[in-house]
Image: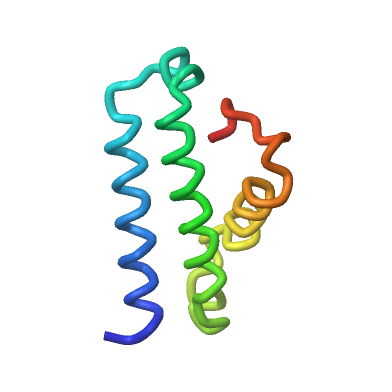
Length: 89
């Protein structure tokens, strides 16, 4: 398996976990559930790190994937964590 495929599997796993964590939650419940928020934020960091490791060729082949937006979300969570808007997650 090539590196990009391994990274995509990491992305899929992280996304599936976010879906599992939030599956039965409405926004009001999520907005007060600090454990789930923390778990989701961590997975967003993982997703952002994984996207950073994708090859430039992958990004050119799949321009519909908003790689820069994903990186930006990761950077906000890591560096501007006090400004994260839970409603955007």
